[in-house]
Image (cartoon, rainbow, N blue to C red; front, side, top):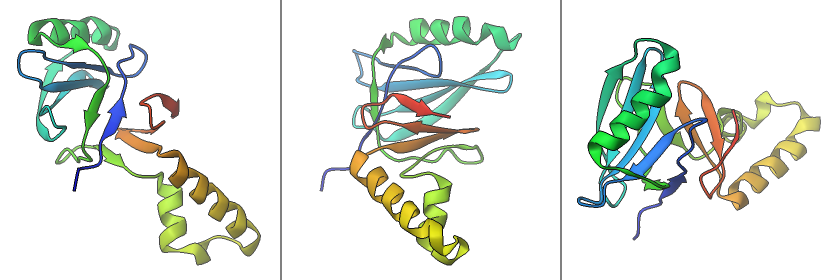
Length: 150
């Protein structure tokens, strides 16, 4: 069975993403406090390891992220990664937002009048193929890799 892949686009506003042509490795870079954090994935999307680089100031993130891309030989592009969790970090991919997970596991926590609406939202979410990239906060992502909301 082919593993499920999640697409994340390269965008300066949220994340940098790219592929290293020589190896096929994929790179996803984001900011975590005072650090630029680089996640490395194999060509088939398996999480490999994490690197980080301290930022002099938060305003340095875009320059440092570009430097990491240049040094690694990564070419800006969307990445396609398998579901992952970075140990000891709030960085992972979830299939759906927490409130929908809660609705699935504990529907009785929701008032009767909201259950129908929540069922529709859940159905729409599943049909859309959207997912959540958690990177210290939740980024609701489209199937195509665009950030839809934070």
